[in-house]
Image (cartoon, rainbow, N blue to C red; front, side, top):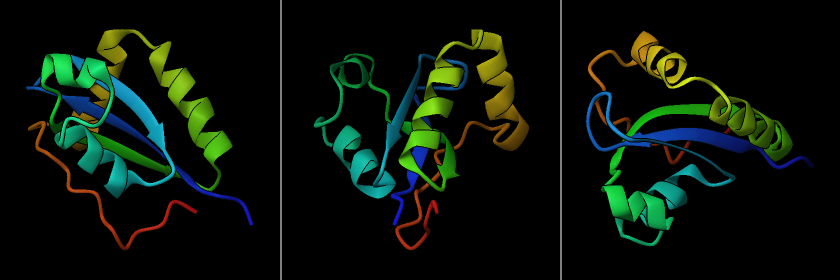
Length: 100
């Protein structure tokens, strides 16, 4: 059975520093970031606000999407976030949800 994946975007404030990541366990990964166990970049800039989450049926699809987003212009990323989350509010990951 294929393992699903998640692509997520963290920030520190509206239109602030953006971090795009990928994971197979969104709840665990966000917990790690919020408890200073995630990437050094996230710790350095205090990125504690999850502003976008995308679910994919396979981790490979999630990785491909992460790479795509990382190649986007910053303004495109901002527009993507603001289309669904115009207030840049923290989105709590749903522990019962499934990417696949």
